[in-house]
Image 1 (spheres, rainbow, N blue to C red):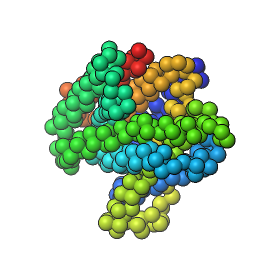
Image 2 (image 1 turned 30 degrees about the vertical axis):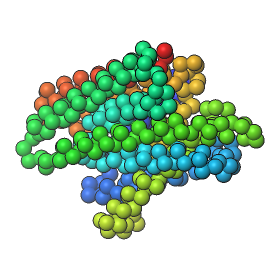
Image 3 (image 1 turned 90 degrees about the horizontal axis):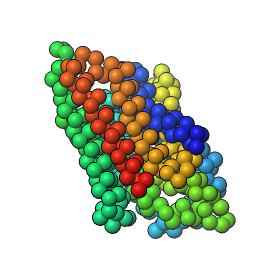
Image 4 (image 1 turned 45 degrees about the vertical axis):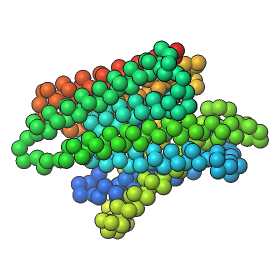
Length: 336
């Protein structure tokens, strides 16, 4: 159980920090020059290279699937890829703290309620369902408080700072949270994939079989995330920036981001079963709470809130507490 807890904590720290390296890219680097390589590494290369270490005969498992088995994880993975792409945009629009708070808050609410509505609608007539709705509502309140804090921060910005399109940034962050929640639906429709990976002749234990769905979701996400970056590289005529002198540090940053991103997924997937019978619910609450906290801390450490009004700083801290409370309420609901 201790090992599981440590893995969940490491995964949360990775999940709340994968956007941090993007703050250290040289000024003037086009968004797509960094995020294109990141998405290619995170959704294509690493699953191809590391996936077989988690799933025995991964490619044989995938080759044995029928279209009806793989279409759900891939399609909802594609939508999740759109969410990850828009999260990357929201980092640029509103910063790490606010983007993480809004995205994770919306993602938690939608990622909990929507799969339950589709697969287990009867739960909402029970006390567990009521707590789930309550936890989701608390998370949404946390998102609203985050947005209010951002407005106060923008109003108190120092003279001479370039104004940002804050409403647009908040909208993108909310949209990213809704789309990222499709990752849960990818797993909701991945039951037959896990059964296939566990059955003979493959014989993967359940925790390994889940990574077959992870690989399909990531590959589905590569079409949307990498596709959008290719579009931006073409529209902005920035393909040449990928081979310009001095590009290697950008690729290094993209690799670190990809390792943190996929490391979070791997640690959560391996750590939850090791927490025992309540691994998913307890692990989820720990993971999301710490990830939100880490994302907010990284925003403060990189000076995003420097010079902000005291009310704005207090607001984002209150929002953090509300979001963590909502996550914990959802975690408790899952224990019932």
